[in-house]
Figure 1 (cartoon, rainbow over the protein chains, first blue to last red):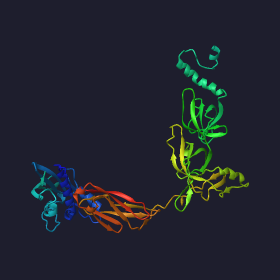
Figure 2: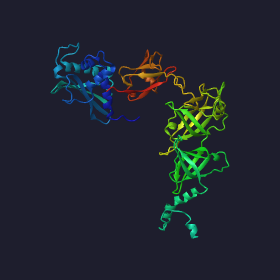
Figure 3: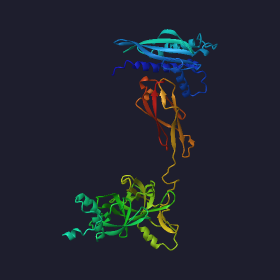
Amino acid sequence: MAKSKTTADRGKFKNEIHTALYKSTNIKNLLLGDTAGKSTNDIRKLFREHVKSHLFIDDTITATESFIFYDVILPVLRSNVKTCKVVLYAICHRDILDGDEYIEGYYGNRADVLSQMIEDCLINDEETANSFGIGKLSLDSVDIFNDKRFYGVIMTFDVPNFR
Amino acid sequence: MAQDWYLMNTDHDTVSGFESDDFDALASDAFSEALASSLGTNVEVCNYDLTQRVKARVIVQGNVQDTKLNSITRRILAPIGTFEAGQYVYYKDRYWLIVGLVDDNGMYEKAVLVLCNYLLTWKNSNGDIIQRWISASSASQYNNGETSDRYMFVRSDQLMILTPCDDECLLIPHKQRFIIDMRCKIYEKNFPNGTTVDTSKQLITYELTRMDNVIYNYQDSGHSEFMAYQDEQHEKDGYYVIDGTGYWLCEEPDEETDDKIPVLSCSIECDEPIIYNSLEPSVFTARFSDSEGNVTNVTPQWDINCEFVDSLDIEYVENSICISVNNRKLINKSFELSLCADGYDEAKITVQIKAFM
């Protein structure tokens, strides 16, 4: 069997992350708003506009909405094992960051709620968490994203994998 | 000696001393003198519908033959630029079709003629009567004239038809039917005066089944050929007087009944022919319609052609098939989804399995 390419995991992880985020009803509701009456195809298109498999650059998006940006890096490559990290930006436009929408089980502003939903989706869902690498996906750090229009959190997940 | 030399009349300067100059100057003159002799004969060169006729003096070769096939071909020599492929030559009260590329050797040009043996008549799409002299030869010389299955025998013969290369000949539609039968002349002789229509006579009819209009095209000239397959005589095949002239015509193809089976079509409808791995099923819906485009209610028969059909989750809901997949190894693979039903043409689409990104 041909040896798996070192960089192939970046693409495979993105496939898993995108699908996992899409399957989360909470995330879809928060990002897309009311989708009643929309076709599956339209929902998928909208979702693609709000979840991107690359990192965010300010001024490229000005819509007053919430977004998820992420990418995968391989910071440590050893002879047999590589560590994969998922860097994920859960960000909201400042105009809709704070509000009184209450979602049971989630706390804080919209970006906080979004980050908790992502954690639920990627970490607390056993099947998803185990679909990466040789170990479980784990949340490594949470940082703040603070920019002109958007505010949110930078979540870093990591997982070891065979090289 | 010198007297013989100057027998040839020429308008050219003969003092250059170079053989090539002499050839250039005298080649066609020498041929002209040969034409003027008893070797030459008078013919008419005619266009495809015989409306333009130009008299020409030519030398006909091969007119004394000792085989049946050779007796209906000729080679003809004429001054350069006299004729081109696809024209007729009217020679000794017969029409001959020029086939093969006409070319010259600096002295004269040569063409190959085949004897025309039938005046083909048909109606074009505008309803105009078209007539062309054709050379018909057998393309199934030694078959017995019938084909059969267990219960019936039908006529079987095919002719290779050589025609000019004009617009009307090139535009003869597939399945155009013709009467090609020498008995027509005998029937005509015996018609009572005033006959305008007669469809009672037994006739041999053919239909065009193969058109070869490129292989004998020489860019600026050429002729066309088609294969005619014998078919069964129709009720309306016969003799018709149109504008005072009698023609033997096949009935016009009836669009309602002739060779047109009502088309029942089906199609597969979907948002996009893609299934995303691990996502909700993609729905493919069967749509059946009759020959007039009306949607009909038919039970669909679905078929999936791939090696991994067992890895697909399939659900049938009314006239739709819902397919999902949860196997990352199948990402970027595809399969063929086909739909059919009794009496309907099969519809196929290629469905791709993709990762949702």
